[in-house]
Length: 125
Length: 166
Image (tube, rainbow over the protein chains, first blue to last red):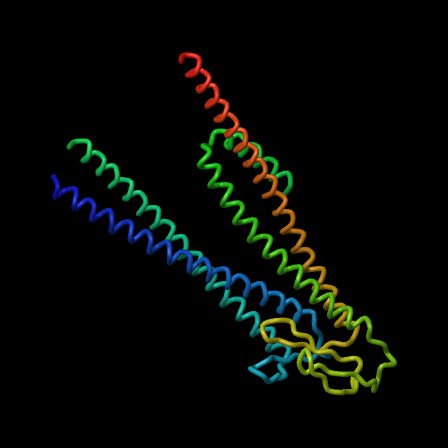
């Protein structure tokens, strides 16, 4: 009997640990997602602005401390590519967040299951 | 959106009364956390708006007879070098992610005006959400108050009863 409950306790502990680890990873992904979202909106603003420009406007890009003149169409394409890339990353982090939440739910369920088993075992004593 | 919230608010208020004080307290804490976050982003947005508006104002004060006018160019916030305005009609504006664009006076003014309007729009959106959350938080608090009062009354009644029997 005692052996059983010890095994159960161990199982419960691994579940709790897995759950906590997931929670930590979750927080990280949420932070990353917020960063990506802000980058996405910034890039969108830039693209909107670039779309409003005509051939008479010059475009520069800052590389470190140097401003380099850019071709308008090229900059538009570059920003568009960046938006595509960031959107893809955003989708990835959303997906992984979803699977994490599902995993967390599973761990929670097994935790309650073990808890019930524990209580039953305790009542039988 | 407002009608949506009022619709969603009704079943929530019904639920609130059914919740235990512990649950209510948890909701209250969560909401207060959210409110601080909202307040923070609001103040950031207000700061952004002030920055854009400041740039626009600087442009408004530019006059067409300022060609070759002497100015002091700030190198740091406390050190200046003398300079002369050579080109009145070209401004290079930072539009984010490292991109800068060259625009004439009117175009630059227009850019900052649009930016200010855009930020204002975002502020109004967030203020709306803020108001909804405040309302919800208030209803949570009032239900919590009612529950506490009821618990207190129950406690007093029980005390009176025990005193009477004694």
